[in-house]
Length: 179
Image (cartoon, rainbow, N blue to C red; front, top):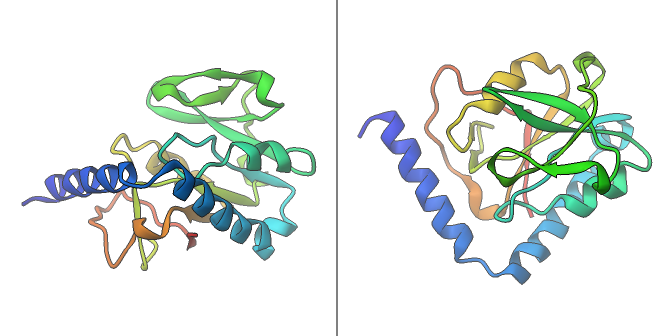
């Protein structure tokens, strides 16, 4: 099996595992994982943070984004062609359904990437060496090299594996947090 096949098989396994978890289990695990983010010293100190508006099978960040936008400048990614652009979150009323069914902010893109101090990164799986397996489109692999922020992968405990297949263009995170 080549590396692309291995990645695709692992993505399918993760999708199947996610489907096997009840809504209540996902919500409880989401609360636990996000409590670790809130307690993280780098998150506490940051004033400009990159978060993400979660898909239904991810750690649920919706209330977290809203809560922290009251005391931090929160940025969310927006899919534009083959890239992720970053936009300021200005409340749920400023969100529209964008690519892949993800709620995305509208307005002006944020270009001062050097000001971002903390970035929360989703993934299909992570490993203990801080490798990340995304959904296969490469959006975060193209974005992450531009960020000087402290990058934290966020996932459910079952998504943290002994190893994930990686290629030269796959970007590492600085740390992985789970429930």
